[in-house]
Length: 397
Length: 80
Image 1 (cartoon, each protein chain N blue to C red):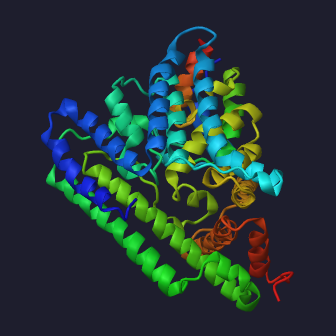
Image 2 (image 1 turned 60 degrees about the vertical axis):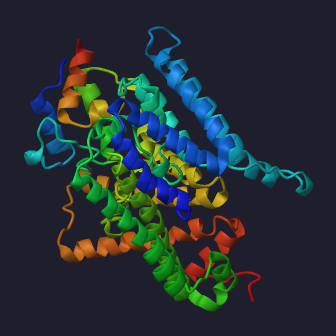
Image 3 (image 1 turned 135 degrees about the vertical axis):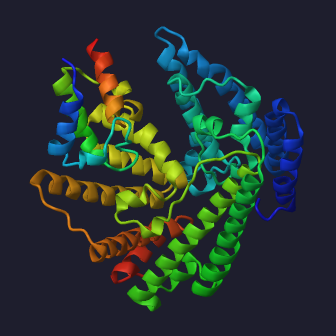
């Protein structure tokens, strides 16, 4: 989408029309521009999402009514949209893993399905919890379909969206938006694609590295994993910058998604700085409810990271990715709790901080074993993991 | 029985070993990482015991738990 000239014409042209219109027409225009553009990419997905959006807009407020059906309304909406997500995203790989070779299931994944599903679930709960009272359909649809953030997030909260709208465009806001877009372009197309992919990785893909893992050895494998982490960061942070900057041109200050995560001192801090909107969503709608029911933070942490993993892709690689990060967070929090209970002073200072940052970076780099091999399957994940640990790789020589 | 401001600050200081000198009523505790996810469970147990209340799962939200003021307000409504 970000290589499409129409996208860029819309990013720079639509704000001009948006600000020339009377305030009451602006969000209707933004909705029409977003839907019109996205429909040129995948009109069936957009039509389905329009139906889902109108359904949520009309039905979600019924959770505010008194009576026994109150909780069932939001739960019903959430289960329905989750069913839609499961059908398209998780049922095909599961079916194909279980079914005979000649009966494979293939469906086209709706555009932006993981992002809009989570936005709609948030909306249902936010309305139920009275965090959202705005009843403008045009504003709601502009939030759901906001084209700069549609395919790569951030996963904006509707209450945040409503509270961070500006009613006039200032020179400072326009400059901030354009600067942010420039940052995004540099991250995505210079740092991610040229510096990391072309120079550091020399165009090598995970498939190449898995095939040559026995030649690369442990240092070479870790070099690939580190470069892959850098690529993922610049790629995703770049897209987030483009979305944040593009939205700012419409007077929308949407949520930040990254905050220098590669300098985090601890895995807990890392998850406060990397894909912050997904982590925040999962904290509110997975961690808190599971913790509230089980009173067991370990179970809640694992549930949270399994959901975060499967949100990326419905496969064994991302399930393992979630368990890996969940284990890291549980170990870090358990250690902090032990120190707290025993009254052990935790060392501070620059050397200690540098060591913790290095350890965190090493741990996160290790998670590239799961994410980079996601398109290749579990066998590739095991082979890359074995190469990273210096273990013999069966069948490679 | 209602949880008081002093009770809560004492638990944060002595029970969770949090530096309370910079915490005021509205300071975000969890979302700003002053208190971690594991400590949240200990805090809930404290509120239930000190306030002689039971927090149903639907009430275990950041809205009710993310600051001293929010926790005191929640406990006050439950004690009514």
